[in-house]
Length: 385
Ligand SMILES: C[S@@+](CC[C@H](N)C(=O)[O-])C[C@H]1O[C@@H](n2cnc3c(N)ncnc32)[C@H](O)[C@@H]1O
Image (cartoon, rainbow, N blue to C red; front, side, top):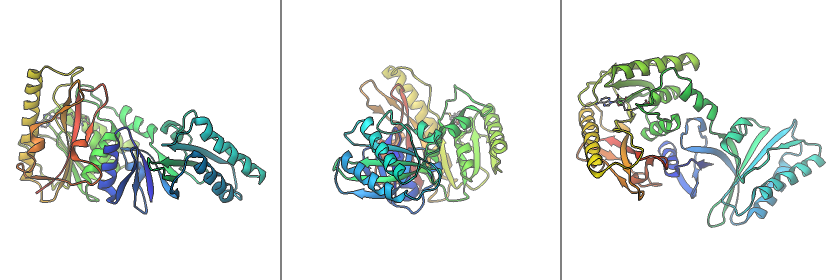
């Protein structure tokens, strides 16, 4: 059993986990329990950290959690060889960073008495940032440990040993060092591309299609996970960008990528190879820095709905029944925080698709946006009928 500390948009993070692992439940507003013998943390886009659950307390506060930690680890590590590096991250407690750190200091003292040396990562906050966890390589070897201590609103406490934090160095490299980037086409963060791919959840070895491939972020992530990829885009320039970016990925990450990249209009293209899954960020219309006028919004919404609707209609006849898709489409955020959706979002059945039922979230919660963004991405998780 594992616990995930979910990312900035917890609904996306838990939906991704449910698609991949099935038996997933909320523990608190920011964490989820995953009932699986093995968690592949590196492939998750929507989890900040995850840990193997080692203990549970039915109720308690930080004092109770602290006592449990100190007694358990003073015992477990009394014969440890080599120096231990320890970080403690607490979530959902009414404790300040000094109290969290004090637990580590007490444990360090207890271990010192038996000749075991421990380096404690200072807590500037009650939880270590993912950057701190990542840079200290916590969770990645036996002697570099991060304890995740999570309390939910009923007072239940879970203690877990981290198996890693988001690899921000690798994400930055994949995002910023690739040779071709295009601010106009948009900057799909690799983390979100991973989540889109995982929500589609292709079968092992499948060929993953992105029919709006742009600079190829989704296909990069799919290649890293070992899928065959297929990219098409209306723009020849984007076909060239995806090709060059995948060549760069293959060379820098020592991968052999099985790819087909060609120009095509998603509204009428005939794809030449069997498609195992579709994972894409579709046409999002123009970017806005402030909510558009009602007339402008109506125009952009109609245009996007036409392109994405015609794409779904066109590809439906080319997909085997049961093929999974995750398609990001635009939704526009108004000043009051409400969203205007594409009409097709409520017409998926008539287009030949079935929304994938998820028990942890409603499909309307699968929206990715930053506070300052008007155009959100709505993730449609569907299968071909
Ligand atoms: C939001 S961008 C996708 C960016 C992409 N996720 C990336 O990694 O760069 C949308 C892409 O759809 C393409 N596009 C627009 N209309 C299209 C159509 N009818 N058929 C295929 N591609 C289209 C654009 O050229 C653009 O590259």
